[in-house]
Amino acid sequence: MTDASAPRAISPFRRFWSRFFEDRIAVAALIVVIVFAALAFLAPWIAPQDPYDLAGLSLRDARRPPGYVGSGGYVHWLGTDAQGRDLLSAILYGLRVSIQIGIAAGAVALTIGTTVGIVAAYARGFTESVLMRVVDLQLSFPPILLALVLVAVLGQGKMQLVVALVTAQYAYFARTAYGAASAERAKDYVEAAAATPLSGARIVFRHLLPNAMPALIVVATVQIAYAIALEATLSFLGLGLPVTEPSLGMLISNGVKYMMSGRTWISVYPGIALIILIVAINLVGDHVRDILNPRLEK
Image (cartoon, rainbow, N blue to C red; front, side, top):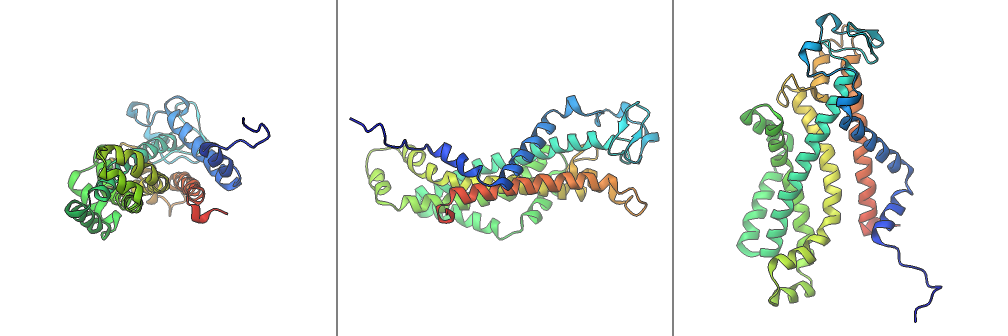
């Protein structure tokens, strides 16, 4: 017979969100991320202009200041860029491109890196040595340098950029997964399970992977923000997306040459949007790390 007055156990999911909402800064950052993601998703429906539609652009509207009424009849609230594109519309579509690339690169890098790290931790021996030496060798190179080389070889485009970012980032997930899985693999209950007829896949998915996921979730939030920043850097240098793609990095690059002439809005507004997005994602990731890491628990 159970005691009705005994307190109910709080599920880990509810406990996580209860602690998350204790930090107002993290909650505000999460709201910003959600709003930006919603704006990016709804860009085709809420943007005043389609920046991909070359027929709808007019060079007469190029480099117009904020608040200018263009030839299309609507107000360019944030002004226009050098191609006559409505800057607000270009930023919305740029957010869409940046978030898509960041999530795609982060998800693929998470999958590949986790697989490499878990396999190395479980297999041990020669397989562990080979896989982790490759990971360590890649971690010795700066990610931006590796991404620059790959983009220069593969060329411009979304798919090429995602491949370059995944190659530059998967090693971080592999090292994190390997560290967490190795600590769990050395425990007695896992050694006992490995001595039984249980399949390796069952041991991996029931014991090693679940214990590595909290650390991997934290790394994923940081690496998504890093992928967005790295994509913007490559596009700013002219090695990321082509000129026709209104990514935030490309928009900033397009306006740099006009900064000295006073047309600062072309670069400043996309730069502000990029900074806010990256900082918000990092703040969410930092708070998630504080919650999931028992050593940081108050």
